[in-house]
Image 1 (cartoon, one colour):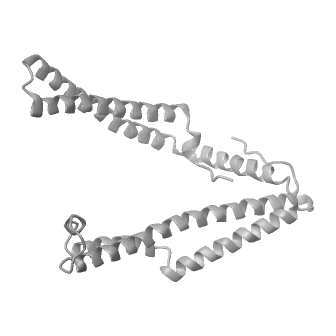
Image 2: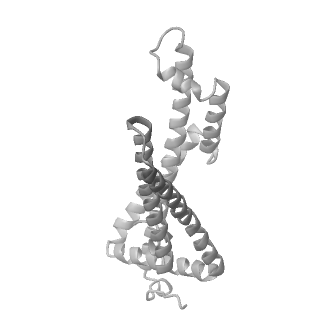
Image 3: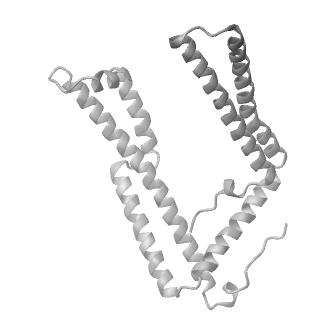
Length: 234
């Protein structure tokens, strides 16, 4: 019962551009590693001869050029999206319908009593998670607000240097206040990230509730709800 992911249904051109971008990025990193190795040799082991220096120069230029191609590839894909946006939107809509119908048909083999109980259990699970998140944060946007608040508090208590200054020393009476600030910020950040994860789980459970509801509708004995599988005409 996975949610439909558009990136898993790419067209050949989309997949080709993505593959080209990843390949050029990997090749650029490989050339950069060669350049870094030559630079390390020059720094710690000894002087490079003129031929090797020229080779390193060309390797660096090639690394920058190839990496630039990797950065330009998404721009080409964006232009392609802009020219074919209506076709792409319809394709994703059709694929989403077909994806959901496949799941509905696969779980339709279970008795309606089992599906009803599962739907009720998922709805209860979602409501419990939402109450828990509302108790901690109060709103859907509070997690993001706390993330930005944490960054602001870091700046107020001394900037990000407080982390390196605190972690590099043991807990003493002199730096105990700094440790308390770090613990407090870590606690707030942990709650914020945990809430984002719970939001994702809640969305997944809600999607499963909707799918089970569709399966129950198909199993309904009413003629209007027990027709054949619909199909979108392009």
